[in-house]
Amino acid sequence: MALGARIAAVSYLNTIPFIYGIQHEDNLRAELLLAPPAGCYENYATGKADIALMPSAMIPTLKSTNIITDYCIGSSGKVRTVVLFSNTPIEQVRRVFLDAHSRTSVQLVGYLAAKHWKIAPEWYDLQDYSQVAFAEKGDAFLLIGDKVFDHEGLFNYAYDLSEEWNRCTHLPFAFAVWVARKGTSYELIDGLQRALTLGVESVWEAVVENGFDKKPYNAYEYLTQNIDFIFNAEKHSALQKFWNAGLKVEPRSNPG
Image (tube, rainbow, N blue to C red):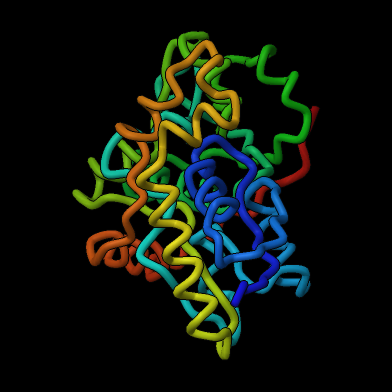
């Protein structure tokens, strides 16, 4: 019997193995709702999706929800696609412009600012990405996702948030985990688990099917060396540490 579900997933390169597995698992008939991480949260919170690849910062805010599957979007070192760029050393950064697409990365950079870098910058929303080309002295830009590849090497300083978290805590990190509402059928969760396993075991096929083998960057290398898909006890401990810190970054409107 085919199992049906509405599944919210991230529309970035780091998720294509999961998407490939969901689309190719014969017993799972899923309607995929693809969006940036913040959109995945919205799709789940508003009831448009039954299951979601949820930004990990949002987990404590969810009600009647369980973390499911053994998979996540994580990293045990340098992740490459969650980076704080600046022409100024981090100790001299005064303003940080935050990519609006990721709640987890926003809170993570706030954690690192307070606990690791010991700085207290002003926080602003980054809605207009063209502003990145006009950085002033003391400005830094948090960028996430595939757009980071376009900015590699353009700034004097690039702080990889996963790498900096690892230096600070000696732990890996999980940027997003799979969740479902309490009461979701075990058959559906098992079907998703099988689909994700298929995807993680088919990274090259996912890269080729989605045309990422033709990109100027090495997508396969990124997915196999920078992304760690396994949600293990260490990553769960890392999230508990992250959640327990209780740090909240509330960016202001872009000053222009």
